[in-house]
Length: 280
Image (tube, rainbow, N blue to C red):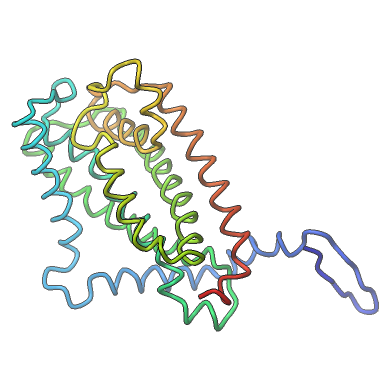
């Protein structure tokens, strides 16, 4: 897009200025980002009896179910000497963050339709703020993992220093997927019903309740086309003292797919952004 820039009596036509200005506006509207993120957190736990404890109860209940079904009934192996419950919960942390971020961000623009149609601001702020609320839940859930490690007397080693890298990878996958689903939900409201199915289906094709090592070797690369496989394996490698071996080709595939997902999601979101106010 070309933008007209005037300076006294001069009129300069500079190609691409509006595009560069957009990313500058993201920083200028950072206070709005903080307000929306804080509002989403407050609304989520408003008038609830136990408040933020819901962020702890859900992953704990799922961890118990997966431990009983896969560990006790199906007799699937754990990762090395790691207790099966800790192995499952280490995978539950990134998956809960990813699934909640997709669900929240996909409907974020529609839920803020009144704001979108009245004032200008970079629309990218809305899904980004909704993902931050899911990230706060992730940080809260870490307290349960610490309590479980104390109970089993099983503590991570130096590999935990790499955990922020895998958190960033999970954040990138959630952001890229969230931007795609957010834009598609505005354009096609059917996606409000498709997103829960995607999240539910993704749970069963991701190594949450079981170890990736049970997947046959000839299928590991194909299985790694799910970007959350590399994220979950990375979390386990960082938290389980290396008892969960890291499948490096699969991790590289996850990194590449996350990058593609973020780039394409941002591109598609920006492509449809001009129409959001009219469609909503």
